[in-house]
Image (cartoon, rainbow, N blue to C red):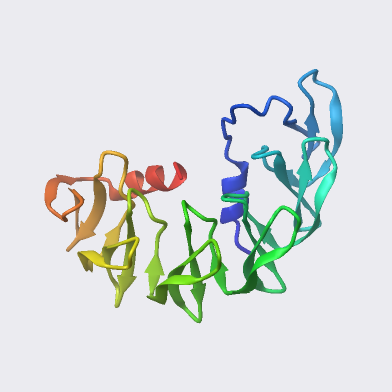
Length: 229
């Protein structure tokens, strides 16, 4: 079972305008929730739980995931093997061995047909079927064909993808912007720079693929960039 969605759900998120949201706490290895008066609203019975986003939090019991609302009630049943936070009104969940996307009524908006899938970033999400990655929109339409061996989320309008062991970058229209030539590639940051690995060396590039400088610790930079998502 994948843990990445659960990890992302557990990252502390600063949420403005949701003062009514409950606060997670731990007791004897279990998770519960308190209100702003430090009163227990949800007893600590869950194996794990996320913070709230848009009025909902992921909770885990018996290795099944579901969602509770700000009143502490189970809003969407704990029936999923994996679950992510809601983005754009949809959440990526795993059910029956496949990934799809539900709305806040627990209705399938995008049927669970994918072997792997990630939450939406903007209007697109990366999905995988039969070992190949591509991107879908909020309607579930494939907007970039599932043809890549690997793919990362879009950041600053570009996404790192790979074929035949080489990484490059594509635009949101699926056009190759920077040729697939690198051994590894991280997402572009807000300063429009990205870290790539090429022939055993690590470099900082701009959006045209121009090398700006050599750097030493690709792994640390990549991890910092990934955790910030």
